[in-house]
Length: 388
Image (cartoon, rainbow, N blue to C red):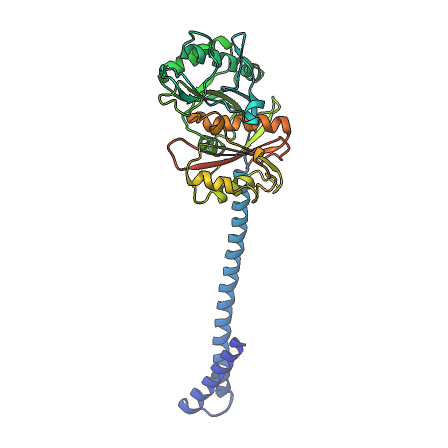
């Protein structure tokens, strides 16, 4: 209607201009200049406006299509996951049988309290903490060698079943009064004794955030990722625990030889203030239904973050967590595990998910940092992510 109103205005203006200022009152020349010229001018304007409109529509449609492609691509990237091929963890729950450690997954899941006043490695008495079982006169480096040997005894058959040229990327994290060089030396000695032939690559990283990095930049690698995290003889042992954790992970897109035990989905970083957003996004990366998560593991949380995490059960995605036995806090039953704390929770959740066929969420905070990571360990019934 506005365009027809403009046409009427142009013709009326043309008549007035030609009749009163042009001095033409009739004939062919009058109608040509008073009606024809304004109509042509109006038509040109309409064609130009329609052309602009069509170009804007084409651009908007192209932008919408690209936006949908980006959303789909980023969603697929966010929903990448790693296969968990092997899990080993030793804590104060482990027993020493014939100089070998026994499994402690059931005690860890049940939350058996192992914190007690005892003598530390430094000789201080009545220090409340939990320790790995030791034989009389055993040194910390000997204990570490026993742990590494036992871990590789369980992990080596899985690695050896991979192709001989399949690389193994090793992430080694530790909190200990033992030097880093000494820990690496003990690890190299245990690795040589295991007779694993695959090439080894040591990678640099820290905490659960390294999983986020791996899923972004190394998702198509053939390498498997072996995470070794430990805390032995910490400098300040009060309210700490000794533990050695091993996780053997692989990319779903490239590893076809071994059957995975469970899946570790992309972790989501948040702060204490937006923890609820973080856990919702971590659940969406799987994705999980509101009643899918059955257990919640909390570790390394302090202050406001701990309070927020306690109030989350009962809300999505924790509607199925209705009793205290479904919330596991290794820090309260064992003590804080230092840099190994999130990996201990992941290992325990992976063992629980495999045995009970139930999805588990881990909420952890790295030592000395305010970042909180939320991640889901789930059974292997989630559709594989797209290669893009």
